[in-house]
Amino acid sequence: MFEARFQTFTELSEPAATPGRVAAVRAALAQRGLDGLVVPHSDRQQNEYLPACEERLAWLTGFTGSAGRAFLFADRVILFVDGRYTLQARDQTDPALVEIVHLSDIAPERWLETNLPVGTKLGYDPWLHTSADVEKLAAACTTAGAELVAVEPNPLDESWTGRPPAPSAPVTLHDLSYSGEEATEKLGRIRAAIAEARADALVVSSPPSLAWVFNIRGGDVTHTPIALSFALIPKEGRPTLYVDGRKLSNAVRDRLEELATIREPEALTDDLAALGRAQRTVRLDQASAAEALAQCISKAGGKVARGADPIAQMKAVKNAVEIAGAHAAQMRDAAAIARFLAWFDREAPQGKLTEIECVKALETFRRETGELKDVSFPTIAGSGPNGAIVHYRVTEATNRRIRPGELFLLDSGGQYLDGTTDITRTIAVGQPTEEMRNRFTRVLKGHIGIARAVFPEGVAGAQLDSFARQHLWQAGLDYDHGTGHGVGSYLSVHEGPASIHKSNLTVLKRGMILSNEPGYYKTGAFGIRIENLVLVVEAEPVAGAERPLNAFETITLAPIDRRLIVPALLTADERDWLNRYHARVRSEIGPLLEPEVREWLEQATLPLT
Image 1 (spheres, one colour):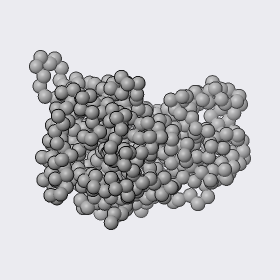
Image 2 (image 1 turned 180 degrees about the horizontal axis):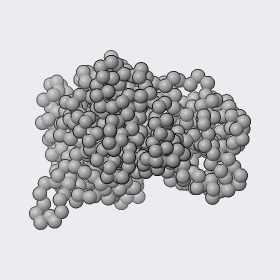
Image 3 (image 1 turned 90 degrees about the vertical axis):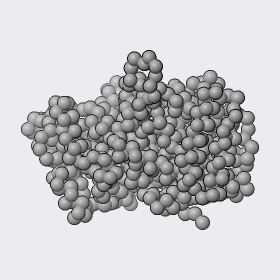
């Protein structure tokens, strides 16, 4: 009945191959006189999702998470992961070869300082690290009496037999009816930012930024519609777009040539060296520009100006067309979610559904909208103990049958031309325990705390993060991920620079879209997360206010499982928020649904008393 076209369930990890691969890379390092190699989860542009040919960390260690780093030495392999991936890394790697270290216990640089023997030569690929990252690694090596050595080509690449080819998906034009602003206007704003930064040119190394500037999209990686390419925008004059010509149809090339000179990607280093020889100052994005780019400029005599990507801030603040598109995408997506939830509530209590069947069903409901271009990330569908794995990806090997008495955590999203969605719901199957209900209600109180927040202009996500955690903290509980991330407009579902995170100091501005997703995870038992997307808007007037105030408008519309709520733990204001939210869901989504689903929705959104 259901099928998945954008997701697969084959186990991508190959821990059994790790011994041979580790031995091959060690031999390559020995030939170069190196004692170790840094293996990050990154490509030349620090993308979140990598093409298959760039998945070096997964190829070497078996770990397939979207963030991590390994140090490979002659006698050990150290894999660093954060709280999202502790359990996944344990399950995907060979414990006889790979030692897992939690980033909260020790940072990779600190580990180097205390563990590298004097005289060690540690290799790194300058195309896979930012300059700031290289500086931290180099400083750690110096402290340990060791040496950080740039190596090209990458010794791991030389050892990788059967490496997949580079992607060459076609570039498409993103129509003005979705983008809301012509590329020429965007380029004008960017040139002004370059001049303000006292630079002569800007390298656009982030593919989502490049897609936004030139109003294009691509298909070089899964789930994020980007073309892997670069651009060079001068303070004055014509930009240059460095893109594989095989990706451009005649019509797309003609349109882009109205805006920029088109060159092959290999020409970028020569052009940067030429700017260096002319002693120009070139701005590089500190988050995505590789150290190799900085070396091209500085070694030729130019000046590198590192800083935040000015495009990222522009892209994060959605214009009126993008905001309207986000609302339309959320409505369309919400109807698909409601159909899924109604189906799940009917089928799950029978004990016959599996995690994979649920992923297939939800993707099918989204595809039936006729507008889905891709899922925005691999669906997280965790039943029982699998729900406690924060970034769990179901495979044929891990697939569980969903049993009564368990919780089912479903985190998913869609990519539509007019917007990107991301929603998490935790669903009771049968009768939940009192512990489940207590933890769920504490997470819900934190979610409502963010949703109801009113804050002055100039406030950053770090200042709001504790709003979501306080009720868990009161019970001695917490979660090891951020409370919210930025979301793009038919671009990355995890978009910077803003987030609701303990350490993020980026100011929240009107027009930004972020997630609101506190959670709780009991290892081996269950996971809970409640996620909606919110739009930063002007707050309702407050009597006597002395500063402009902002607030969040919740734009995701789907029921929150009332069976998991302990009403006595909610304040009157929290209960009122939930009831008003569910009333919106009924009134706005109900008319889009078939009678039987609409009847289910009416019951699922009854007022909580």
